[in-house]
Image 1: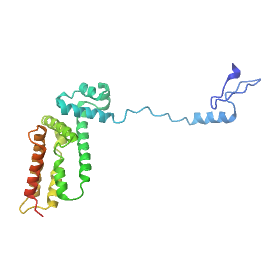
Image 2: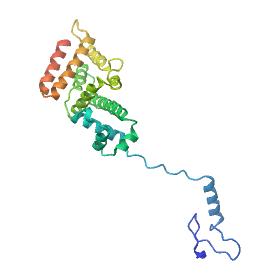
Image 3: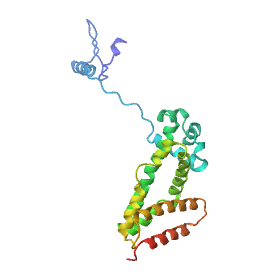
Image 4: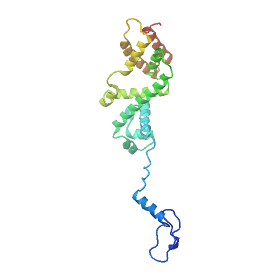
Length: 238
């Protein structure tokens, strides 16, 4: 059995010797390689990471629950079941449920902004076209925006009694209204029109019309005609 030993470096056969201690390596080169390996051990491979997008997967589960059953049903157990993971996985990624709800809301806002920018960027540079498209982003005109509006409405209702969620909605400034006001000015105002005031009215009014669309109280065509009516009222004919 002693004659069958192999070199731990190259796996080659180690020649037997007639006297003295039997060598471990088949050659001085392999012995040197083993020495260097002990001096500079290889960096172990990193542990298998969590599946990509696990936090996003859990956030999407929150969205579905909020849109279909209301945010009050978004318990850790329900979220885990909807996401197809264990409650322990949810707790591993988020310090508590409030942390998860905030993350899901902020992620949805970024998602909405990304989709909106993509849709609007494809329309060119005409300020009138961009103005109408910006207002349309407040309406549930497709599945993504419909789901988003349902989720945001559920969050908004909860934010009335939750200061941390309210802070996400009530941030400083009014970036959307400011953007709409700038587009109104660029599109050409009729005399005596205040772009800022009209922007406030349009954003608030179109947001309300979006809720009417969710409830099927109004049709899509009716809502778009209402938007065009107000834009024609404030913009110059030129």
